[in-house]
Structure formats: C-alpha cells, structure tokens
Amino acid sequence: MTVKPNPKITLTSAAGTTTQKICINSSIEDITYKVLNATAASYVGLPDGVSGNSTPVGNMLRIFGRPTTPGTYNFLAIANGECHADTLKGIIIVSAQPTGGTLSSPEICIGDPAVL
Image 1 (cartoon, rainbow, N blue to C red):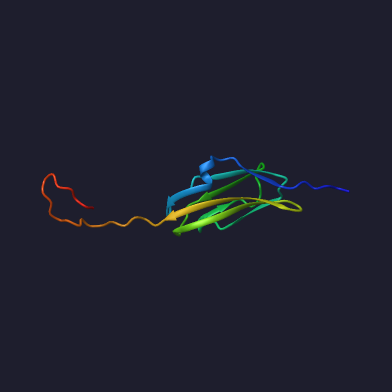
Image 2 (cartoon, rainbow, N blue to C red):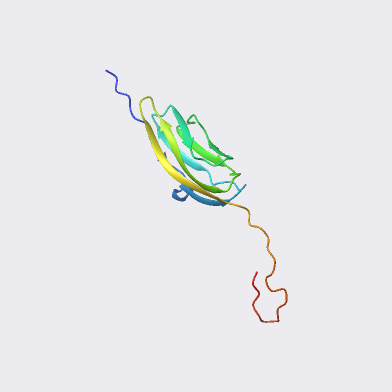
C-alpha cells in the first residue's frame, strides 16, 4: 500500500498581504505561498487583472497583478494534491478612482475654513 501525503499551503509573504485595500489599476503587493506535496494550484474569487501561477515553481505560488474592477473580493488559494487540497483565504478590496470635486463655498475670507 502507498500512502500519499496531503498538500500543505503556507503564507510566506507578509501577514498583511492577504488583506489588501488598493485603488483600481494599482498593483497589489505580491502574495506568496510555500506549498508541499502539491501538483497544481487554483484560485477562486480573484478580481479581474489579478492572477496566480497554476503550477508551483520551486514549491512557491504567487498572486500578482492590477485589479481592473472595483469591489470586495474574498479569494481562496488552493494547493491541489493527488488526493486532497489545502486552502488559505484572503481579501482584496478595490476602490474606484477618486473623482475631483468643487469647492462648496467659492468665496471665503482670510482665516475662515473652506470645505473641499
């Protein structure tokens, strides 16, 4: 009988990389994982413009890119083995680009506050 080991996925980038808040079209900070006994990887819930490698390179996985759509994205990084899978969660919150505004009080006196 052959006993096949289960895959294991471990975060190797900084702890805060699995919870990121960024503006649309800005690069996320790369998220990296070490995997053991994994034959492939998959990702669920990443925003458009963000992806990850599907085959471990040197037992490492990497999520990278520039989100192109605002929203809140709860994602899974999955290390697939021959029999089972191991999963870690994360979240990427993508904000729309801020829009310019106008002064709400076009005339002010010196020393008075302005509302922008």
